[in-house]
Image 1: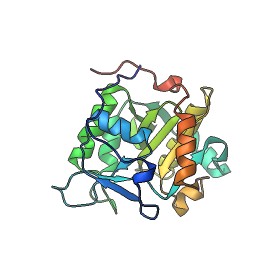
Image 2: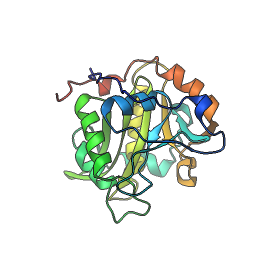
Image 3: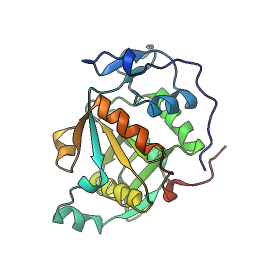
Image 4: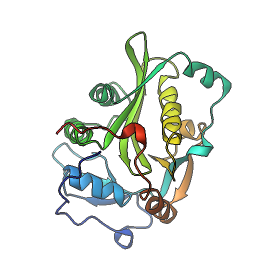
Length: 228
């Protein structure tokens, strides 16, 4: 059972406070567990796009990238690749985040503050990693924030061909194991993600969908004793 941290003292923007044409909706606050969870529950997420000394930048995309579980596309080659990896959950969350933060990756955005914040949420039982292993080596994976029926994907990586896609397939399979309304939020749609079934929805429709999925219980596979 995840541990609920103290609520944030910050007032995060609601739908009426957001520019209808801008994905960036606020700058400020902090990355404390209570702030992060309040943000995700309102459809916001942080991304450090300014200078290292800047406060957090908060986004709520006008066009949101989402994956409905039923829409996942798994071509035959990917289904075959899934048999080549061992799937583990929450056994190497720090290593997954570090791999996603590798500075050699293009458009990297995960800095030390983000790493610390999400590992703290992991310790409290809110952040989870889905990992693809082969021959005792972490080959790829993803991590994100799980609240009720929402899995807010943060980043994914691969060291071997198809390993990140295999982790995504495993995530969807894991979410399907538990009943209830569930959704994978990927923040923005890309051509790569679209090939796997990701679509776009409006900010307003995402907010309505979010309200529904947050009423669902956390997936059974994510229920564990927090490290507190």
